[in-house]
Length: 488
Ligand code: 0RQ
Image (tube, rainbow, N blue to C red):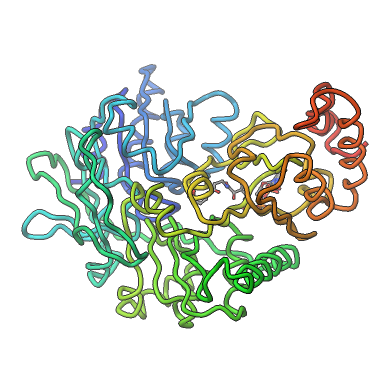
């Protein structure tokens, strides 16, 4: 049927599970048709909002379109759309920012309410009713299993040759019946290549032929390249110390330009035979696979620029042998991440001198994107890096602050902080030891004396385990909100 007919089957107030993970595999026609319907209902004076659960971020056609018409009541677990972000930050819609590995199980536990409809993009429907997934698996298995009704968007854009790249694990159960997840190498296969779907639940099938969002990355700038150099030097140091094998351990890399620069840096590094165990595979990791530096990679989605996508499609048989796409409850699973010993590298908004990390909030109260999978990997990985340029917004904001204005990852989960200034290895250090090394190694010279002054004065009175001057700890953010800069 048409997208309009399918959109008419979604009721106001419904919880809708949609496919989509980091700009890949999201439904493209139905959200737009639904946005038009919602807009018409609002014009007629009828309230109409739905809650949208996905894998991770989607694209303007989904998050942007539905947020624009004030059609979203609750969004979870991650978004990166400018319109959606503006609506969240103006208070016009709710957003539940969740660890990506938690989403499926919280839905199964009944913590999120009832899932009415699943709207899932697929590559094909097989004769036996199973579904060939797209470039993103995300929470699709869970939405298909839990929803009362299913709507499928069959997107003809991807070739059938993607069939076989996926590993959909059906062994999850609810506590107390859970069993170990028998995955002991990044490219192990423990599931099925297709998604199961009860045909009796399918109420609509819509055909499309549209590309994914295909974000283009900036070529690594000098700051990102410096950050990458520090990380690669450090990994070499760990190999020499015997703490990491020569081929390292499976790499996880966050989203964004800095993350991509680190992967580009690895291309020039001495390490060989690398593996990836990550949630989203972007251009940088594809390049490592192509050059043979990396032998295999596991993810929940592939999100590429147009040029990288062209290479992927031209060489799909090569990549299908080296890439496994999994549900995000497995790609980000704490048990698996810890067993494999993942080396986690994620970007942040700010770190404080003691090693607490803010990944999500600008100036303490405005949401950027969400925690995504950073916590799944940082908490459970073998090594956890958090990276950022030392300053933001042209130098007026220090990304190293006395106290984080919001905390996503605590000092207990942070091992290494990296800026273009340097790298702070915080393993085994006390808070006061950490503070000095973060100030010395990571702070921008414009802010280093201010941080040192704060730390020195904090050590003159009060508790001396984690010294703070509470009346001053967030004054840098307060000053920035008032004057536009953290500088005095
Ligand atoms: O805003 O473009 O308007 O200037 O934040 O910053 O430096 O371009 O870095 O694109 O790597 O994003 C943490 C947001 C970093 C991202 C974050 C402003 C800065 C700019 C972006 P402008 P950059 P990146 C796996 C892991 C959480 C989820 C995660 C993220 C914009 O990496 O969302 O890790 N991470 N997932 O100017 C005010 C500061 C700032 C600041 C930066 N201190 N104060 N603004 N900015 N620092 C993937 C998934 O989970 C799916």
